[in-house]
Structure formats: C-alpha cells, structure tokens
Length: 241
View (cartoon, rainbow, N blue to C red):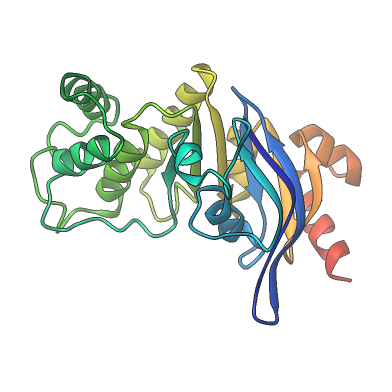
C-alpha cells in the first residue's frame, strides 16, 4: 500500500507539487491522471526516493520513504519516465544486474528471470545487447528489471507511452496480472482511454494539486458527465479558473 499525505515540492519559485494526498491500495490499479506538467512524475519520483519532498510524508507499506529510503525501495518496483538502459548489456544481463542489486539468491534469480522472459515474451531478445532495441523491447527490459525482486508495490510512469499496439496489450495484461496477485499498482498517464480501461481508482492532478479522486464512475458522477474525458476536462479547467 502507498500513502501520500500532504506532500509538496518546489523547484525554485515553481511549485511542482502542492499539498498532494492520496492512497493506492493493495490489489487495486490506481491511476495518477493529469495534463503534462501537472506534477505526476515529480510525485512518483518522491515515492521511489529520487527526490525528497519539502513537506508532508510518503509511506510504502507503512515505511517512510524519506527516513528509511532503502527499506522502502525494497518494497517497490519502478518503471521511471527515463529508462536509463546500459546499451552494452543484454536484456538478461540487465535483469540479473538488478536482481543482484536486490541481493536475490542466484537460483531464485535464474527462476524469476526465466519466468519474466516468458511473461514478457522476451526469449528471442534475452541475449541481445539492448543497443538497437525498439521502444517496445526497451520497455519490456525495464519492466522485467522492475519486477525481478517480486515487489508488493509497482510504480509505472506512463508505461505505454510510444509503444506499438502489441506491446501496449502486453503491458495491460501485466498490469491486470499484478492486480490479480494483490500487488499495488500506481501508474501515471495523460491517456484517457488507458486510465479508463485499467484503473479501479483515479487521482486527477492539475497544476501540482489533487482536483478529484475516486472510481471512474464517481469521477463522472461528480461532474454530471457520461464520458470520463469530458469529466477530466471539466475538472482541470475548473481548477485553472
């Protein structure tokens, strides 16, 4: 479970995140939805320990990410907005590298690597260097390394951005499988159809603050709109007035 309580973060005079609060439950797909520049990536970076918030608290399974960062990071798998792959390593070597960073037993590492290569349909690229990989192939490597330690919480920053139809379908299937395993899934997106299709709970952010949260039906009902996109636009525009 992920809990965010009144976190704020500024970069100079720019308030990227202002007093954001929400929770992402176990076995629930929670979408962080907002226009570009709304504060989604900044919020996720605070949650996986890349940035420190100026105020407020962020908890991962009850662990304060700021006061016990390494322990909290053991509880999360992260697909960041910048993938940062090592072009000279193969897909398998990336997965092994991250597994060893998490101090997995070598036998367990081999088993989980095999399972992930199967799950992500990566067998044919497992022993190729990632230099020259397509966007979809790179995304699969990033997903595999995020999941290698079997984390109870998974954070995905715009996971289908730039993917082809088949890879997008794979990512959706993986998100559904994670939900079935009672894993907390929190992902950011500005794609309405993606959020509507996958999310049980939605947190809408605009200009660094939460403007609405709830199930897709609750979001629509709060604005008297039948379409989630129309509800989103109304809420964001209302906040900007």
